[in-house]
Image (cartoon, rainbow over all chains, first blue to last red; front, side):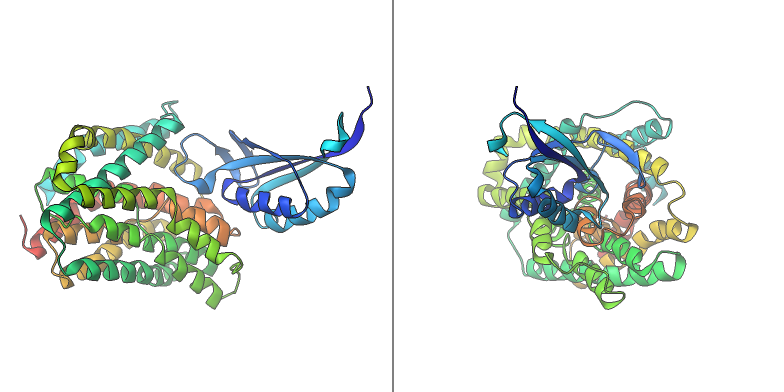
Length: 103
Length: 325
């Protein structure tokens, strides 16, 4: 089957920044993304778990975008402006999609 | 005082909190499902707001309502200045960290407020119903003071989007529900309360016990996770700042000539530290500050202190000085 090259960008970020990030992505021309809750993890800021949090300050989410390769730089510029001072991780991987016209 | 302190420590509310705290410190897997904890907090906010509104409808509004709101706003905006100065003296926190922590101590803990009203109700001490509205009004001013402190100093705050930040704080779900329920209670009055009192009066303390069990678990986890984050000076601040805030609340309550319960609640509001609205605002405005610093202080040090020793102390002092029993 014919497949097409695309980029998969995963941004793990604090819940409190979610709406700011998605607005920045939309302004950078990203037409679709998926948001997943994060159950917990550990990193430079220490261990963290979703259970038992009383404040939105401690929540994390993951925003996943699949985009055409030429849209990557504008997306990263927009995302970095939001993510840079905050706890989080941004990764980019090569991927393949079946219906390129959707991205 | 000792009698009230003992009665408070052995109340189901405090013992439920202690159970959760002990379970978390002992690394038990006891936990309250996230959705259940959220539902309980919504219930408590609705019930406390509604009952406050009914109280205002029942007893009427006197001239102190506007003054109490103004007093609360001034208290919330002023306490961070004191907290910031004290933190800079006693702890090794940087100016930005101290400002972020100070914001928490100017704002309020609505759970401590709810527990305070439960103690007052249990002892039959009257208070002004509109103190719920004062509590809501005290959430945000402290954040502005903290941001001003940072901007005045190192200029590290992100001024962009401050309007959006304040919009989020002022319209966060807890405040909307609290004020909304207060207005509904005010409009419907005692007749409205009689329709739903089996839901919002009788189960109230039981739900509060379960909620504080969850808060105990969260505080215990915070103590474990926050070990080593704070120096001794910062830890001491978490214990004496509530007394400073309570003294300021006492002065405001007495100056306004409030009922003993109202004075006690002003003390509770002055003494308590936010761990819901302000941490979220600080993560947006001051992301360079480690959230474990302020969450550990407000949730794992000050909240347990207020719940166990602070509340009976504030109620006793307010009753003695404001002329109640």
